[in-house]
Length: 231
Image 1 (cartoon, rainbow, N blue to C red):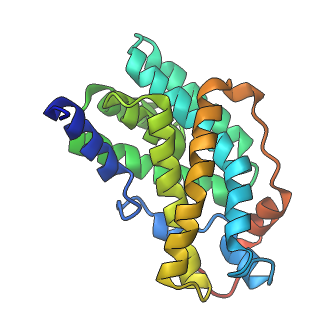
Image 2: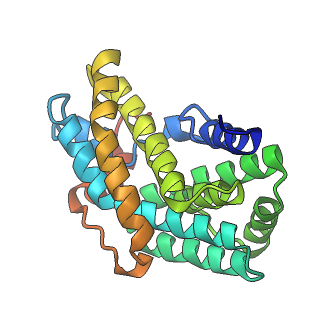
């Protein structure tokens, strides 16, 4: 039987990975809302779309989550500086303002919440440094830093992050499409092997070598402010 030192951090990681965590996920669809509005995404094609999303945007964010987890676990004296640099790099790779601002808003809220709830030194310091420097911090690196601070390895950290990310997007789709609870859970179930594969790949690939090509999603995100109704 596992001891409390193993089970308690796992339960705490699950708490932070809950899609219901109040970090603003319900307010951001990252382009999905526009795709539905344009008739380019429907219930039948949702699972295939999310699979490809994982392979591209998911893999990119997973790499920054993984690197952040490693920085937290290694505990180097300049880890906060390196972590802020990771956030700046990821920010520069988010081409569309709407998705970039949404990721930053969720990241800032997640980091503040995680720091206040856990009182872990590296999270408190990261939140303070981000506020002092005005650096936009993004959800994937923030989640990875928190997971690493709790001792989670990079593959576990990324798997938990992808679970949260996909659950949030599927929840958004349930408000945008005629997607029932059973089908939503089936899609999440079917995506699990892909999440694991992406987690393993991101743990071994330097962030600078990963590419992400999602032009349709980027255009959809950019058109979001012109929609008449929005989440």
